[in-house]
Length: 130
Image (cartoon, rainbow, N blue to C red):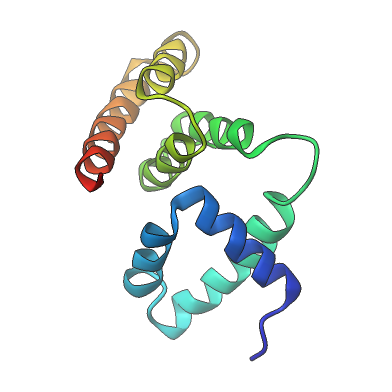
């Protein structure tokens, strides 16, 4: 199947957000079968190509929105991905930790604790990669 323009745009944005090496790793480990490949194609076109490609907010702000949304909904695997994206867009570990701490009063300590544990793992992994 030929790659659509949205797929190509989505691939570019996804690589910028995740880092090409990490995006390629996900392609080989998560999207390596026909079922997940369909999901990955859809996500590249609809989420990365259309949604992330919309004007109005910069990528850095969009990553922070995702970190907050994932934490509020207890979506830990997605939070790990979005924390990586946020770091790649210039948010510091301290800034992201403070964002999560700020959520204590709004969504509760248990979710923030899990988010901080996820952040600890992601930040450690990213520091190990450099």
